[in-house]
Image (cartoon, rainbow, N blue to C red; front, side, top):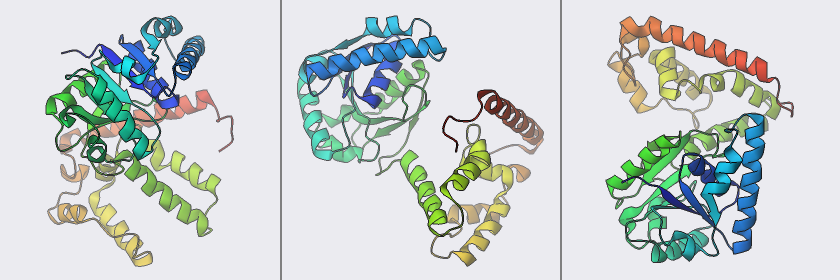
Length: 318
């Protein structure tokens, strides 16, 4: 069954962006917030933003009209969620506030309404304790800014009905997003990766190895440059898992408390699965298709370089 009506509870920057995404994908969206006045003012802000984005060519030219037509503001949470197919909770990351909000949502919506949370770190199983019939509850974690970042973490907990996951992934695809189902652990995937990177970046600055500006410049012009096209496992496969294992040994000798070669890496190297050059690593790339992969890589990197030259430097010099 198609999800056609959505309530977004929490109409600030993240919730508002989610509402815009859904509205531009043809869904009717109702906003709710701490007060009717706040929901109304945020709706007006979303229309102004959509108009600005349309004028700049990064939204459809009629985006403001579409948002104005499809997004409404409710007087209360209970009114907003009473008759919708999906509710997306996007209130601040305070457990007590989320529990209170989810109790109000699940106590007022239809029995068949799917309830999602945009939490970025709190366990979905923990949040589910406040939901009536938790089988319809899951995490639907957009990234900032929700309007433009394509990936969305879809996080079922132990009791989530699998059909709810399927319907959310389908909806996200229809909105131009990429829904990625993952397991329910604190921090999920995005923030565990993001904060692990930041921790090491902070250590480098603290140790005097580089300035924050230098770390950012290295990150975005080297390995970060690859990430729009290849994730960490694909990058490792292309480089060679035996190369990664050797580098881990060097890092372990210098920083034994911070770097140890992962067991799943060592096991593959021992089996001769060294990545693209052997036809199998973490991913499977037939050796006869390696030239095709290399050609795509080179063309992708050249295209990104051209785009960056076209856009120019960021207004704040990093």
